[in-house]
Length: 171
Image (cartoon, rainbow, N blue to C red; front, side, top):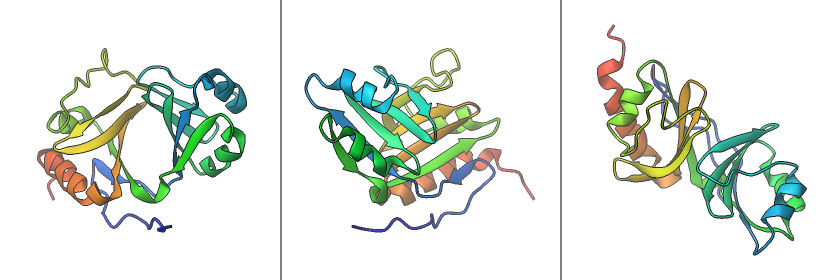
């Protein structure tokens, strides 16, 4: 297994590469979604949104499918082994946070979805594109977080910093 290293990309005023975190996908076995919720002690989202439980973020990824992100997600396999397929994706994902007063304007240059507050509220989530790159996007209070396959991280970082360039402080 590959070892995810610290991001080689520098933070800017609006684009902050995130430290590697545990990332796993969970897909409930047939008729096991309710039991999976019970085993985890939460109600997993049934629509494109995010929930948090303790130090773990759960993102809806499709019918009976979720992405779990956090420092202790590896322990989920023990709780869910008979209820869901568990795939560790920690080494294959890169995360970026877009924050600041121009976050929506920056992302609007890249993503083909409406990020207005009334359409994409806090905890909203989407599977979409940023330019030509497939991403998961979600909103955390006053910022947006994106994850992509690690092989596309350099291209996504470049696209994000280019989209943010006009808003960067001069000096």
